[in-house]
Length: 291
Length: 347
Image (cartoon, rainbow over all chains, first blue to last red; front, side, top):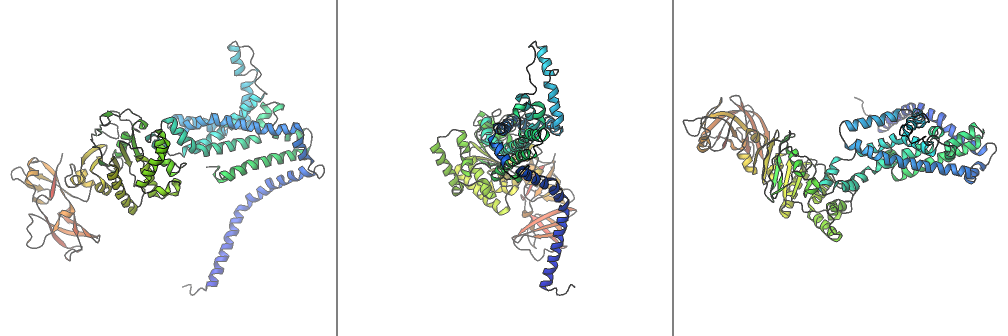
């Protein structure tokens, strides 16, 4: 019917069709590419540019960050706080995720619902909730009064309240990452361990814990990276002494109009975040981050 | 030795004694309670009532890790984060075996399953059959009293499955361990077992050697589940010894002794398709049926004829090549000897 279609014609045909298919694919990608370039790449490039050109071309801002003790302290504090919050989330989240993944029925459903609800409730709302709970007219202060323990200690605007708030807000990320990994562990592995003579503690240590490690790494990464750039919660609950990088950036822009220096700090934060992700990518692969 | 009598919704009133060194297969369709029974022996399910004993010791309330029973799971359940060697050494580590002996024993058992050179591999680097052998080695390495196998060959393709059946039998002979094997594949059960326990709807229908289960099933279910079968309903004549009146097919001559305790009672009559013969002129078979041939399935080494006789479907299997007289639509006469049939009392 089609007769003798020569090889060359056939190839040409395929090539044309292939090209048009590529064009369609690019067309579909165009809106998101455009948005990414306009809203992400351009601003970042601008920040990069500002950090070395405002007010004049130099790397002085970067020198300041790493030589002036106040700024170095902010950097160190940000990392230390992020590590502490990550560790706390892990310690609190692991047992929680364990129960959610291993217990069937309403306990698991209830916990999952609670975690998901707090996951979907805004940062700001939950931060303000802590303001109320820990405030001078809040339930904690009232409990102190009722128990006759005298006036409650100053809880708000401290390292404690800020760490507590950040841990609370980031906990769902940790729990859900852990839960996803634990849910994937085949129950037969634990049965096999038991049949082979492993008591529950040994089965946990030798089988469950190692198999849940991807969740630990994923959850820790999510919490740590998010915490590095945390702003709202430390501002509302913390003290200026425990300033985080984002607060420093905000202060430089809002109060001092030091766009160049703020940009340099932002770049440092960005590089630090990328470094953490690069390390993760090297050992685990970023594509595994979301399961 | 193990005696067993559990009662859960899933299984009910099962009593089974297994001899030391025996290969017993729990056979049944899915949902028949065979896996539940296995899991109760392993200790993962607790019977609501009844006891599980091993060598006179009551195991019923003992945890799985206190039982010394090996389990091979259907999906192997190898620990993905350990090498083959560490997987196999796991039960020895859990039992705090001396290190030197551990390595020695692991080598020994890997030799038995022919996987010594794979000791350093990760489970995911092995084929399905190899993973199966690692699971087997891991279940045997600590000299358990019993090895339980839960459809261990279910995930393998046909050729590999046959290889592994032979392999399993060899290992069973060499190690001499008691094995309880769960499967829904009757061929597997027939070829490997010392005894088959047939399950249906949570009850044990029959526990007997394979050939007895095949030739003398205790219930119609067993007869239909294992092998190909023709079942006819009828009534044993109480007056004439050995006479059975088949519903719609007339009278046949059956084994007089078998008929004795069924005299006057309704019975299911089992005729295995390979017991039916094509009757040639002058043949002297007491029982005959005219069968109109419907479908012919040629297996090469045998022919299966599916025909009709008086409204009853009849299956006939003939060894060898397809005879000339056998054509679709033709009518042939089939016959069988007294004693080829098996009678089952119908309740």
